[in-house]
Image 1 (tube, helix red, strand yellow):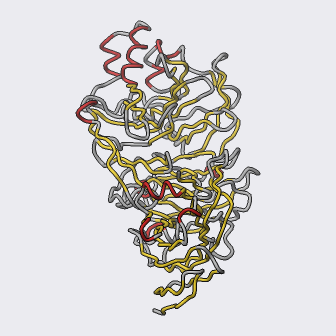
Image 2 (cartoon, rainbow, N blue to C red; image 1 turned 60 degrees about the vertical axis):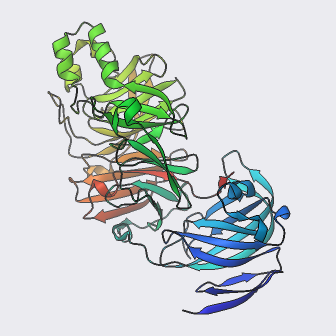
Image 3 (cartoon, rainbow, N blue to C red; image 1 turned 135 degrees about the horizontal axis):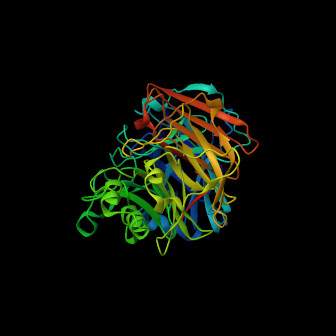
Length: 504
């Protein structure tokens, strides 16, 4: 490897191994670059003429030539860097964590000092730049081989796509989650050594299950910390059976307890403190009994210690202060956030909930026109125009009888719900010409209006995973197929943003 001796700023000379640096006269210089815990993270140490002149530091990683992805960039306030132990005042040194690097590549990175910090309404960071230095960071190969060479079914044309980065939720790889860009490049992986199904980007960090009854906070710079354990106080024995989703005041964990399987939810804040609890067993059992159903029949439907509901996604709808949950075995259900009373149910009326229980039929939404109900479903969310978005797998129930209908294809569907009229109308769908069947797992999410990411996570029962991106014009921006990978490689995928991240 070559050594480069470069004059930088007003400070003098520095030596770097496999790192090129160029700069004009500046108030800071780069004194060292240290590899981070993964190839996607490095720590850049700056020597600063005066800490009093710096309010923040910013880095920007240039995309590869020809890429239409947005540059990864982040701004750190000096106070944030101090709080994380990245400032040595006696030596006038600042460490800048640079994350989102390409693996096995000579990355071009722009570093800026920021004199006056600005924060946009969208959460991005910026400010008035004092000095700039461009550096090269050579990274080693990563070990996440399965994600690096997909079969490209549609070459990326992402110039009109609102997102450039994808949080791929997997548990087969021991560092959750995997972050891809829309060129299918791996750009970041977790460092906590946990392969878990559950993760969410919240408060500028990833919250993941620890694989048991606890919660972990995973930082972008590679640090991670144990947040909370929920067994002693709440009887939770699994915080990672499915998704973590946005809530009203925090985010929602879908958990198992010693008594209940896949029907209990905890809303928690960034410190892991529990804000609210709901159990769909209690909610549905109460509605059935109040509706005059017999106790024996009710307990035969809402079964303790059994996966009778299979809650795989939950989301908060601020428009009517409600929680919407996907219970794959039964239906999509909406409950009032405060009273926990059922507002409506959307689902296949050939299933047990409708066929066997008159008390639940009154909550069923009437489908307008040619609208199809979701059968097996995942990834409920609310779109920018207030509609319900979900992934309809097309597979009937495993654990309820009758199990309802099944189809031979899967689809992303968007429904317009009229709660006053108790109707549902499908207003958009993407079914890949009905050629793709993904019976379990899978997801669809909207980024900017009408920009979608669809994850067919279990094509033909685990032959491959497919990621499809759609822009606002309805054009397919990319399709990547990961052959030989089942749902454990990416059971759910959601667009995220790694441009203009602001740490304060």
